[in-house]
Image (cartoon, rainbow, N blue to C red; front, side, top):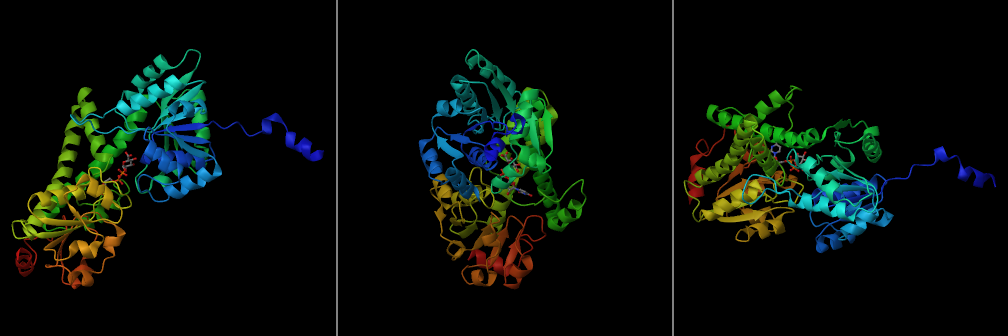
Length: 471
Ligand code: UGA
């Protein structure tokens, strides 16, 4: 009897009813967010229009590679807190918070973001609302989008149903998505009423308790925080790449320089790795969308700055192509080139706007016999560039090569044995386009290591090796 009385306990001590969550879009962002929300204790339904993707996720498998995410999805499919469906209306009907995590790719005909998917998701949620709820945008959008979506939601939501639209940008990195989502640097909420803010504080109670700052800002500021963060990161990379060019001309070493300026806490060492530059599904399209939107709003300085950042970044790809041509004695026609890396960065199989594949494809177009390998991105790479040859591993990719290109700095490549590889190539020249190789170790094995901004260029390299390369 006592136990029963204890169990009934005072109303105020009962745990509050937790909001139920739908997550619309199950790409890198949405699948990770859905699994992370389940990990934080919520009941979550992930929604995607693609039945094949939903079937994979519902079977505990991912349509892409992201470390640790498959385990998290499997754990919460099993815990019963996570499921996936193609039925948006059903998911909305059983949820109170609706996270919009669909893509905002670059339009094919301009620099602007393609907002069709975000608009479609918000319209779909609005039409399906059967009870009050909060629509939370997480996708990266041009400033001003959320205000328009708010109007759309208001216009389409059924009479008598109250729905609020707020923005909660995401800062996760591919390859570290699970950790970034569960332990964010900050939580930014835009345009929330007091009630919606309280709900968001509950959703993010664990990260907040771990010390993540919770920033409640207005709608346009929230949208711009995200884009500005990516624009700043892109600027940092292009800055160091511009300095790398100067280092090459002056015979200085950009890596040592980055270490030296990076110890200044105002500058910071991260995102100062000179090399082939940035790619992927976020930074390039985000700076272009920012350029476009800033132009519409008359903020010309942002347009000019982002244009420069983009141009410097794209020139790095050209620079590496030219280094390869120089290393082969002025032409890559019929040269064998071994390429290490296809993904836009390590720990992902994402090849969207991959600098590595761009370089490989450009050299192939100039008549080189290019063989690419990548620990994860072979299949996506082959789908994007079917005319390139893909090898199982690095030793196969470099066999008989006149020059080897390290384009994505996977640990597997940094750990390769230069002595063993030296026996497989025609000439021991490696272009380290990420400045990540242990140059002493490789040089000791007879390799000429050509970096970007590290002082070693094909012109300063041992000419006997270059003649061999041209052989
Ligand atoms: C980026 C941001 O880092 C995330 O904070 C953001 O949430 C995400 O975009 C997004 O908008 O969704 P991601 O695209 O996963 O994340 O990749 P990053 O880790 O930022 O790397 C971008 C590119 O910059 C890669 O190609 C990488 O090789 C290159 N990079 C990075 C450099 O060339 N040098 C560096 O020092 C650092």
